[in-house]
Picture 1 (cartoon, chains in turn yellow, green):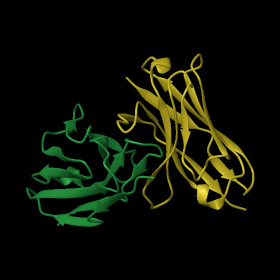
Picture 2: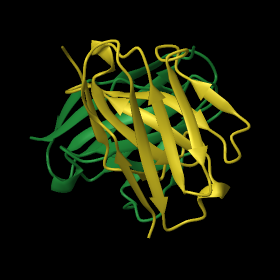
Picture 3: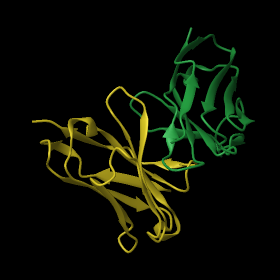
Picture 4: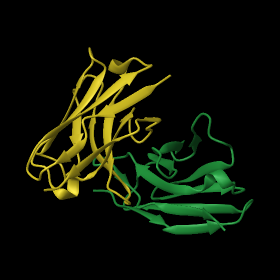
Length: 117
Length: 107
């Protein structure tokens, strides 16, 4: 069974950093592209970043470019999102999702990031 | 960036009714479109990909159609479990963009 489990969310002050993780199981992680998508409270979905299976291709939304870094460790079956210079508008539930866009067949349950002083 | 204009923003349907949700892209996305359902407090679920291909395990009352810049999701026979939010997502170009969503409720 495919499972994606996000962790690392929490309350953080504006300007600080946070690193999210997504632990994958039930499939060969190194064969699949991975993605981060977020959802602000009561709002719609926003794509954040994508990374190819071997990390050769990486893409970011303009709203996070230069502040967030997506990476992966295929030996640990884990996807990461390093977030720096956090802003209040980064407050959201962050999901990881598997596969080539836009066919995200598997999603985690999300981890909540709250940016507030 | 490709803009996805989704309509309507909300919809109320009776049980058994057939409904449609539309997404219009600001440029040709060559059927690189997926539809998602999100129930309250849950992660999104993939319904349709490549504009008209039904994801495994999704009931056949869901269907997708369209090409170029115009796409639609149809539910043929509204069921209680179909209540939720629906989003389209274009995957033709980065940055990927979602539609703004449609809230579907039972009348």
